[in-house]
Length: 300
Ligand code: HEM
Image (cartoon, rainbow, N blue to C red; front, side, top):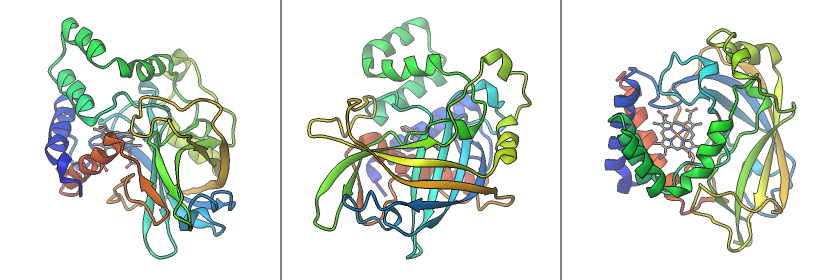
């Protein structure tokens, strides 16, 4: 556990609770979600870069959780555009690893402290001056804010791309380290709809829609970074021309009716052959998710 972020994690959770209220037993973010049984079939293309066991040739079972980003477990699907797709890979040695992604390619801030400060301000109900100060203090947030502003509600969880955002390092048998970013690409074409159409759907339409569509699948793509590409700053994208490789296919087969909801989708839990980058937001998430899960596991 990264104790450096324990205090920050508490402030983060308290700010979320102040903004959205406390919903006992639920995640403090991405509270509303549904679980699915899946299988990930790697194609061997990642093997020159990583010895990670789930990225070689053998299929591995997986669990997928789609979620709405809000801390409100009763959130209406069409009202919040940011959605999550979390994947738990069950490795042959009994261990697990996670890829936790959202439908936005960049994060709002370079540091977890800046994000928590934004949440603290939001919790206190910022005045126009505070908001102005935010944009001056955190110009790096502009890209994410602009994407968020243009986002439209989903038609289905199965028609979006999802981004784990942070950089990770792949390490191969020879010990070579390659910075990578990931992307999940849907087999179906992307489709969004106008807000006024989406609001006519029932509150939980995304879960129902996916149930009718199963099985659905996604290709896992990796992007290879080059020297000089930002590896510790999730507010910037790498240049478009970086090589992309498809490394496997995730088939989502069946809804899990009684899921084990005590799982923590912690993006820093990695197998031999994959390492975290120095992105401080990535490292803080470990402490923040631990604080959130401790509360929900205790029915708080
Ligand atoms: C400092 C920044 C962040 C904060 C404060 C934060 C906060 C949280 C919290 C409290 C949870 C609930 C954890 C649990 O109870 O298990 C959560 C879940 C989640 N977060 Fe974050 N998060 C941050 C950054 C990110 C980033 C960069 C991503 C994008 C990849 C992300 C995507 C998700 C997803 C998809 C879930 C749902 C996981 C699941 O299905 O259980 N978060 N976040």
